[in-house]
Length: 321
Image 1: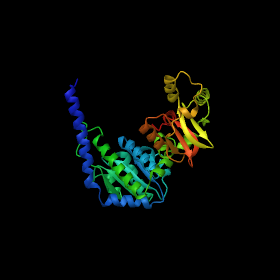
Image 2 (image 1 turned 45 degrees about the horizontal axis):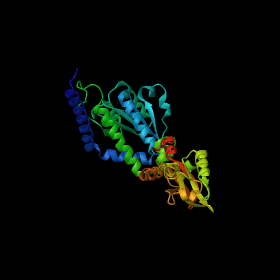
Image 3 (image 1 turned 30 degrees about the vertical axis):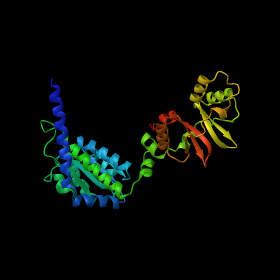
Image 4 (image 1 turned 60 degrees about the vertical axis):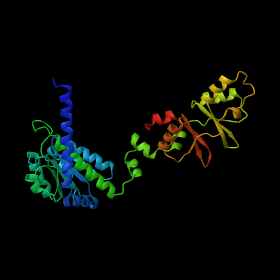
């Protein structure tokens, strides 16, 4: 068993080796890197990313990042490529092949086949003397001094370098395309991340009832309206204008102060300066308003008029929090 101290030392050593490997990539962001960015931007096809072993896993992640940031990409496993999957490559596609050694049997077989089809071949590799390096049109050098593995065998530092270089490429493409938050939301409509970028306060309000009451309503009527709509609050309205809001907390505080509530009306209970948000504002902004003011309900308006109400629980259910 390793001691606590040795475990920490191993972890720190691993992270240092991998961070040094990433820093070492700075010298390899060169003319070829720029050409690759320009080539992908000008391409009418997709980026086919391939590899084998751990490099194949990194290739899948690069494909996922490309697709989510506006660069169409497809993963092709190098072993499957020579058994039929080469058919997925179209004439305008660019192929990027990831390999540490650049000399694995599958890569050595695949590279010349890709060249025969006339597609541009990019090699993301760790050996400039490899077979892949000789076949590639452009190179992304991700060579590392050693793996974090003490036996220098398990791909660790090398795959970290591949991952980082892939991210650098994706972000350059993102910036060049002027890919913005609205674009990002369009590609991520189903997740909580996407919802943060497109879900509006009005979208949430539409899912709820619109609890309202007149300023002359009795305490009993206020309680009934709050309980009926299960939002913990009711809006006091006159002539379609918002006069205030009453929460269940306001009711409790009133009952602590008064024993005779017969003559108390909604106008006596309401907060005449309730927090509001326009229906077209992002739900994320609604969350900020709720957190900043330490409240659980927020009025939603349309052109200054009452549109609806959202509750903190609505934001929780949608994964905004």
